[in-house]
Length: 368
Image: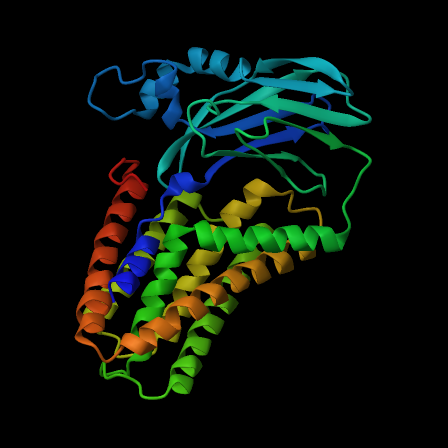
């Protein structure tokens, strides 16, 4: 019993720094080649002093006040080569913004080189020596090649401009991306868990006797969620609908809060699949925020959508198959009703509330 309890709550405290979502995007097709470095700002304090008023919180104004020093730090950790010739890099902008729960910086760099014909090579190691969890997605804009991940173990990579991957290779890689996005997306996992928790009960919170009936209910929930997020993912990636990413992140937190409170107070009296569908529309935009940063949506759009979507579904199925039998086995116990249905949901509601506040106002309340 103790092991089950630890397993469930270990999912609750998955940390965001498992995967730092930093991006480097090359634009080599325009008349003036550029590279955009998009990185989280937390580790900058290990290089320069940022907290001018010493209140323990780094504000956007404090980051902007140090922008010239920050530019120098980035330039000292990146080198770009076109056709094996090193290029000079010049900052042409500086932007501070918020993604999910951290402050990020966008630093566009002009590449003073003639357009490459054969290869683009990059060496990059910003923060790699102080944060072993750093991951950087490097991609070529308007190019069908899959983004390459740099990390403390792999600090450089080369794009061969004439080499293109097959649609099948792209599909497999996007499928893997979808699986890992669910497994490392702690907010999506919590939302899914909040949908699974009451699925072993009737509308009046009585244990369901047959596992087949529970499976039928789970199938309705997962199907509704999948259809909804697939729809809005497609709308967003194709630029049919655009919604501010900060608004979506706050809405995702509120969706978790609403579902957790319903588990505690049962004000909907069942029909969880409707909740899954409605909030699935919001989560779809959240998935799209990741894809919009990772790949050029004008290339292999069908492969992108189908591969990533099936990856997300596969990741969800694994979680359901791992957790549902445990929930069904424990459903008649006081432990389940007290510690999982109500206790787990109560803790989730608190965390979702704090997420909503910090995402809405740019605060640093939780470390994950």
